[in-house]
Image 1: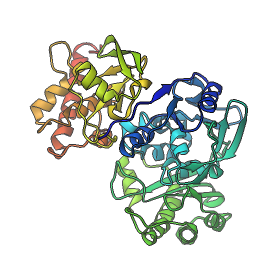
Image 2 (image 1 turned 30 degrees about the vertical axis):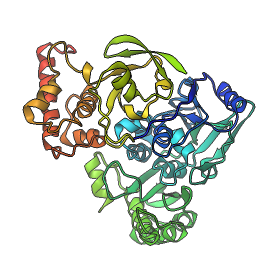
Image 3 (image 1 turned 135 degrees about the vertical axis):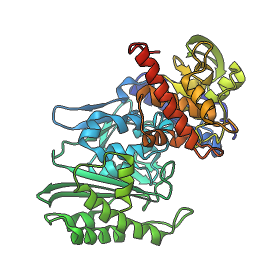
Image 4 (image 1 turned 45 degrees about the vertical axis):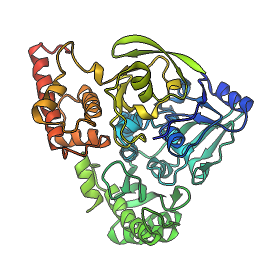
Length: 303
Length: 166
């Protein structure tokens, strides 16, 4: 395996300093979070950034906290392993914790960060659908401004986001949600571990005696960006969740996704798997309690 | 463009000079001379290069020297307890948990991280923890057995020591 080319690594202590560095040093630099995409690109694809600005020494970017209004803030430099094991996330949004657990290995998840994963904008990113069904907002900052965009609008295409060259994704904010919210994420891939999603489906529902008061469905790996399946959501709203309505919603999701054929799978197969997995995810979400073990989770996925 | 990097390596404070783009893996093997850590795939898929960074298992092939100032690193060379093998090493030997041995340092460091967190893991928990460590020889059965046996030995040692950490 080839080695990275020589490069200077800066370690700013604040977001303002990091953004100013990027502005001063000009085009061709890269921000570094966990490095599990960037360093691999430098080794495997010969990517040679002019300089690197390491964000890991900025304390304000890490950690998960609940705010007074009930929203949950996940710092962009929070590792996937922290998202997977954080008691607050496990209790409130177990499907988000499990979608983080689907990424790579424990070694990778100890480095990979949730913000780096979003900024890398891979269409198959496992946590993206789970964050989308929670209406997550992305808080972005630079030296001289701040802005917030819906995570759904943050992605522009494979590897493309709305981030300007001196802008840093600082926080993912999950707005206050109904305590009854239940959800599920199904990663469909032929290998149990260490694989990329062929199809990823997240759902989040608020059920009142099985009637859907709120429905969100998001899909990964079947469009240039992670995608909300709004037609499918509309079918569920105010309906009683049963097998028939889950099937209808799943069919809608399959028709509104935009998969491509590639080395992993054909577009037609991906579309069919969106249909099957969306139905399963909807019915699984309504089951209580969520799966306790990995084996149980696997059985539910392939039932 | 060499940088001074202060790290704690296997419990000892060391200062090394290395360019920022040097991989932790190469820093350990080529600059410091600790060749126990192996390179398998070089892309974070196989786990052969696993070391503990601030107590957590990571792929040393994906970390740059420029990220490391102040880090605490434990490699396979730091696993031994004085002159004795660690119970994990003893169990891998006793159970035949190694064949060609190339994946073994990474397996041991990942297993150490697992047992630090969870002293009594189920077989499923062991397999989940080791899913980022590939072995092309053993078929994993004896590796999983060795981790279970080491966990039992560590628990017994801890009980004998009256609950004190070893």
